[in-house]
Image 1 (cartoon, helix red, strand yellow):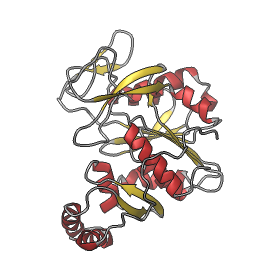
Image 2 (cartoon, rainbow, N blue to C red):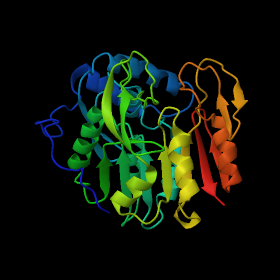
Image 3 (cartoon, rainbow, N blue to C red):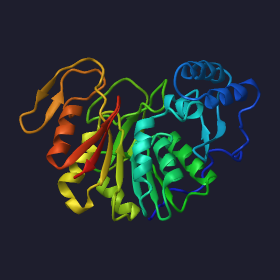
Image 4 (cartoon, rainbow, N blue to C red):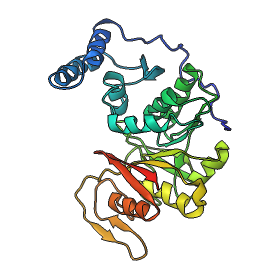
Length: 311
């Protein structure tokens, strides 16, 4: 696997461990993690998390799933969940992904990696020869990913690529979530939202597969805030079936706004009039139907994601 983007950067001069949770914040973090599942322990864990979160801000160095991570729980919903209650974060998705990752030479592509929750979970489970390609367009999150890869000495099996993924290669503008750093999305042509943006490289999935030098994708995870079809459909349309991912994890949450879907003249349904979509965006239902027509069988549906196996 080729990777040109794991170079050392000035993300942080302090070594991992310099920001270990201490004091009352560290105590309540320990309490939150120590609670067993089920009633009433989940309620106690949530209370402990609330207290700990008020005392742990900025970087926190912690071990999650045996991995060394530097997290910023006050800027990201995902980071807070992974830090305080890692056992509960996307539990069903991780259960299946953890089983798949045990296969020899397992190759995982994480499109919209955010802080790498899925990537580092796979790294903790995969056997010898396994590979992870984590793709994240937000420059700050990509630097954080690279730092955590280095902290784990995992540069030989984990590659971080700083890019957005779309239907065509080029450049684009990425919105920056003001309250949640994980809520970033690529703006469509001519689209303006009034939010802060940053210019980013845009690549197709085929581009990234070629650049990484991988010849198989055992699992592809795509979470790009509504643009999942623009990542998946061009690749499955142009690539031979032998190159298709064996498994898919795709965000399929319905956008807010309650807009009804309509049938486009030349393709699948698109959502009409929803607040968090750009015009012409393929609906979750239409994308799932499109995948089913190509042999992908849904094996799990959670609140946010659909997990599929290629029949």
